[in-house]
Structure formats: C-alpha cells, structure tokens
Length: 469
Image (cartoon, rainbow, N blue to C red; front, top):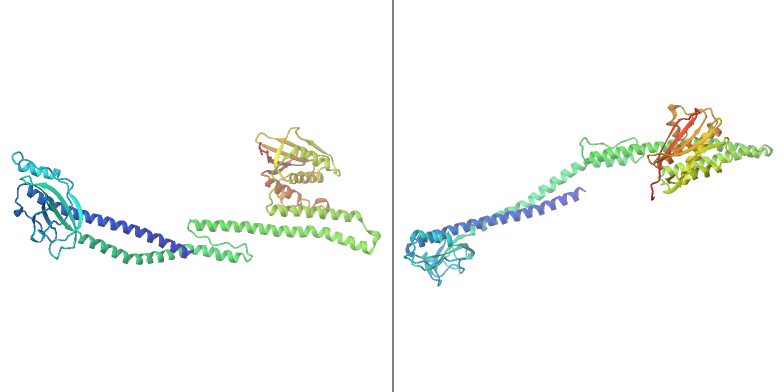
C-alpha cells in the first residue's frame, strides 16, 4: 500500500508540476513578448511623431540598430530612412492595420497632424527574422511593430521598429532548464516524504494487524492498541475492540451453552443407561414408562438445542402472513394432555403479523407449558390489537408468580428458579430463552408481570402486519 500510495502521489505531483510549469512558461513568454512589443511600438511611435511634425527623413533620430532596428518605408516599398546597414530593403513585408489618409497642407497644422497620427495609427506586430543589417542582427528574430502615417507633404509611409526576442527566448529557455533540472529532485523529495508519512500513518494499522493475528490464536480478552488521535484509524481500532468484545461475549456464551447442554444431557442419558443395564441384568424389572419419559425428554432437549443453534447461527425467520387468532385456536386444540384447561379470549376479526408460523407456535406452546407447570387452578390466553399498530399476546396463570428480581433472569438459558425442583418436572430451562429469542427476531419484545390472581402474566408484543405485505 505504501508503494502504491507513493507512486500515485508522485505521479499526481509530476503531472501537476508539469502543467504548472507549462503555464508558467507560457505566461513568462507572453509577458516578455508583450514587453518587446511595447518597446517596438514606443520606438515606432517616436519616429511617427517626428515624421508628422515635418522632420526630414535624413534628420530623424533613430535608435541603435543593434537593439532596435527602425525603417521608414514608402508605399512602393522603398526604404526612405534607416541606419546604413538597413537601407538595402525593407526588413518586413507586412503592412499595418490602417494608414491614415493624406491631408491638405493648407488645412492642417502641426498639432492636428500629431493628433491624427496618434489616434488613427494602429500598430501591427509580427515576429520577423531579419535578412538585412550587419552580421550581429541578421538572422535574429525581432518583434516588429508596423505603424502607418503620412508625411507633411501627404506621402503615406510605414514605420517598422523592432525589439529583439533573444532575451525573451533565453529567459524562457533558462527557466525551462531550471524546471527540468529541479523536477526530478522535487519528485524524489515528494516520493520520500510520501513514503515516510504513509509508513508513519500506517504504523497503527500494522500494530492493529499484528495484535489481531495474535488474538486469533485464541485469547479474545486482548484488545488492539487504540491511537490517541481522533482519526479514521482510531475509529477503526475502537470498532475492532467493540467487535472483539462482542466476539468474546459470544464465545463465552457459547462455552456456557455447551457446558450447560452437556450437563443437561448427562442426566437423562445416565438414567437411560442405568435402566437399560438393569433391564439387561433383570429383564423383569424393565420400566418402559421411565425409558419412554427419558427418551421424550431427550427428544425435547435436542429439539430445543437445535432451534437455539439455528437462531444463534443467524437463521432468518420466514416472512409470511400469520393469523394469530387462528394459530392460537389450532395450537390449543392439539393440546390433549394438559393438566388444566386453558381459557382463551381472542377477537373474531383478523389479527395478522409477519413471521414464521412454526416459531410463533413454539412461542405460544412454551408459554402455555410454563403456565401449566406453575398454575394452581387455571391458565388463560388472550389476544388484543392495540391502537399503536401492535398486537399483544398474554399467557397467565394463578401460580406462585415470578419474583421481581428474577424477571429478567428467567429468559436466560438453562435458568430454573426452583433449584429444589427435579429436572424432570422443571425442564431444562430453555423454553423461555427460546421464547425471548424468537420474539426478538420478530421485532417484538416480551415481559413478565403479576397476574390478577397473583401468578405470572407473560406479555408478548409484536408489530401488526402492514397492509399490502
């Protein structure tokens, strides 16, 4: 990752610097060319001013030809005024944008000529490689300004003035060379800094990875180091520690579950083995009722353990329409061996929820089994739809009730409040745990209160199925 980050950062910086360098060179070249244009135009306008006030061509004050060559050219392309080395032919062959028309000597005075030349003469620029002059300026490139004007006698002429572009080109070349020389060095610095910064930034990540590798060895009580800075890596470490805590809790719960399940299975298996060994030694003493009872208890315990294992594995409940009123009637009609009759109070209209019919039937069955186990004379089941789009299922009895301090604990696995009660009568302590898990997975909740007759009243609240689902 460090290598990829460094390469990417260096490439981005290289592209950015190249584009910035090109922009700087273009701006520099443009500014230098503009400066040369201004010099050439100033020199040309100075000569134009001299011509318009009537100065003779032989008397014109011309700048040095080596730095600013100047020519005055007639309309038929004859050189009227220039330094000796520039008189052979015009140094440029383009004409200015506009040449003011001639005026009558009798109507215009000197001031008017100067004003007319300054307001109507437009400078036109070209880059020209001179083919006239001495050896020092020949074949050099000049920025030439051409301005048209008219002499006092009405003769149209063109003034050419040049400014050397060598200094501009040399300056641009020097800057380009400096950039090309400094760019690799700068990119090396960027790459080195990026590598070091990335390594420093990823050091906590490497520490987290190393700690996780050791934690995967089995010690879930350890935690990854959490940086003090409040950045993404610190949040990653915090989330990792939260995940490890959840894993540790889950692993501990799984260990307790396995230990409790093994403990619960040991009793009926030992009882079955004892009865079978006695039956083998004394066939006449075989108690089929005891064998069948232990077998049924093992079957129920295995079914409960299998359901809890599926729930712990994240098995999703089916999303089907379940009519609770019909489910209650059907399930209670199947119960033929209950100790006490079950009174029901359910509405005649439709009360539907979304979920698994099998799991919701298990919720009802476990609650009724629990009530039958503790009730003194009566068990009743009620169903009601509330105004806040929920349905409330209640299963109550008139037994001894549940102490307030134990109302949360009874929904834990393998919890039996009456320790003196035999395992055969009290069950394995998984029924209410299964009820709580199934209700939670159906987006509901369960609580226990005192019933009107002093027993326990289990209240299950589930969301009503929305129309159209």
